[in-house]
Image (cartoon, rainbow, N blue to C red):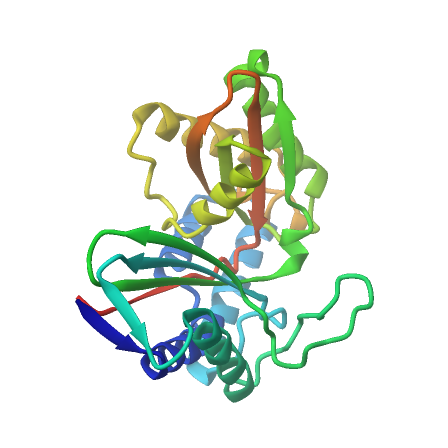
Length: 282
C-alpha cells in the first residue's frame, strides 16, 4: 500500500493552479495553429493569430491567459490501495487551491452562497469528483473553468425516439444560441446518458480529453466529427467575427441510461480550455 502525505498533495495542487492558468495546453495550441492554416476568412485568421500571441505572452511572462481564472474543478482517481495520511484529501485539495490562487496572483471568483454573493477571497471551495480505481496511485485532473463559457452550457432530457438526430440538433442549437458570448472558438464536452446529473458530469469530464483524440467507439467518434463539421458550418467564427473556426473540438462521453430517457448535456468551453494532470504514488 502506498502512503501519500497531504503536504505533497497541497504542493502539487498549488503548482497545478498556477501552471494551468498561465500555460495553454499543447493540444489547444496545436488546434489553434491548425485552424490558422485552414481558416479562409482573413479576419478570423487574424483573430486566431492574436489568441496564439496572447498565449505566448501569458506563458513567457507567467501571467494568466484570461482574467477569468475560473472555478477550480477536479476529477480525482483514488487507487483503492492508496492511503492518504496527515489529513483529509478534500481539505488538502482546497488548501492547494487557496495557496495556488494566492501565490499566482490569480483572480478569486468564488462566492460562498449563490444568492448572497459574498466572495470567499481564496477561490475555494473547489468542485471535486472522486473515482475509486484499482492500484496505488492518486491521479489528479484539474481544470480552472471560466464562466463566460460555462454560462452558455445547457442540458436537455430528450425523448429516446429523438435518437442521434435529436442529439445533433440540440448540440448545434446550443452553439448557435451561444453565438459570440463564450469567446469562440469553443471546445465542447458532450455527455450522453445516465441521469440528468450524470450527463452533466460526463460533459465536464469530456473537456479533459485532448483535442483531436477521438472516442474509442467508432460510432461515437464519427458523431464527434459530424458535430464539429456542423458547428463550423454556423459561420460564427473566432470571437464571433465569422469564419470556419467556431469550434476547435468536440468530445463526447456516454453512459448507460433508462429505457425512458436520453439525457444530453453540453458543457461549453472557450478556446482557453485549460487542463492539467498529475500522478502521485505508484
